[in-house]
Length: 448
Image (cartoon, rainbow, N blue to C red):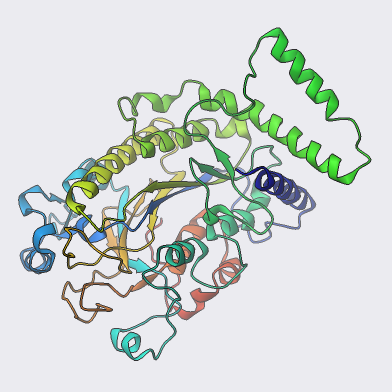
């Protein structure tokens, strides 16, 4: 973080804690304070090609896919079929995601079809004639990243729906030095609330002051620093800065032993050294010590990419998915070992999907609606949600002639489904996701 951001973030975290103590926040929380739930958002930066992540496996569907995908089409013999309870396999996964098959078979993986930013339901005819409102900045990285993370509407400017969800249930969290919102490796608007922002955690190394250790000299310096922080409290500016530093030291004392110590998850992450694996291992460490931290609700944000595959997509996409798949499997196994599989729900977001038709550089270009994964013991898994697009260029689901799918499920519905499970009631959902009222079905039904 920049110094000014740290100052602002830590001050607002403190404000949120005070409001929670006064009972002014969290009025919409449904659950009791005796349970634990966490949301883990994995943002696939750059626009993941979901057309090659989830592939039709039936004969007609695969033929339509192969015809349009051309040089980027996968060989069917390499596609990993997802067998449904009735024994059929309508869809399959990219071979680099093969480790997710066991998660699917366990009933802990759901696939959400053709989801993206929408202001209201939109047909191809309405889109072409511009008869209904379109989200702004379609096919643009910064615009669609922001829409995915804020919920697509102009609500609570500068906040993300992860942050708004966390603040809606802040009353369920006991007062703790550690905030409910944590970002790992990267920070973005998703976990930003109106009164608080996420605390950024490193994916390796220690968390705290450089040179701080258990030596007598280090302890003496920390003691002296603590004494200095108690001086000159008459100035509001100095007092605020000292409170920020004191809070940082308190968070360091709690989190550094957790992040640098051994973990139950280490066994499952052995030999996994990718960026996404290290980030998920960090989250697993925090979840392991949830009772020690004294929190009942947590929101984690992870960024992983770059999925902006305009050139040479086959190799790049395979490499990225070969890191994502094993990391998700290891995280799922870790949560199971920790007895937290039903308490943590992991889900993917991304800027957009990619065009079904490849470009002339062996890659794909920016599109719109895409498919996403939701993982956890509370997920109604081994099933699909939403509507799979008709893989026809310039067809009924294509916003152009390149295979840019007009979403049939919205970010707001996606967020609302997760938020309801997290403990947010219907009234609060309508306030934090104002576009939700435009859709007849607020929940997409993938959570138990």
